[in-house]
Image (tube, rainbow, N blue to C red):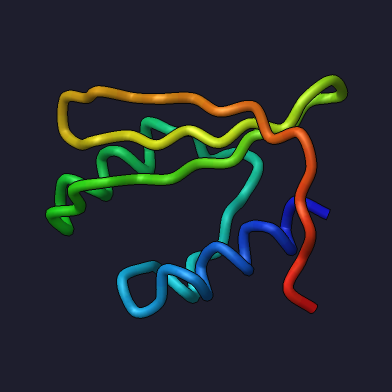
Length: 78
């Protein structure tokens, strides 16, 4: 379900997004931060999901600030 939310957010931010980026469970946030410095990325949006909550983090790179939102509910575009 969060994959649909991520895809919708990519469509909203198009063309300023990594549309074909494939996430893997073994990748950590630090891996994305390292790649962001190589490609001169200035902002990053990251969704995370646990059993109890879904959150959106908006980061200003390379040194902050970072703000975190708790996602209470959402509707997919389809």
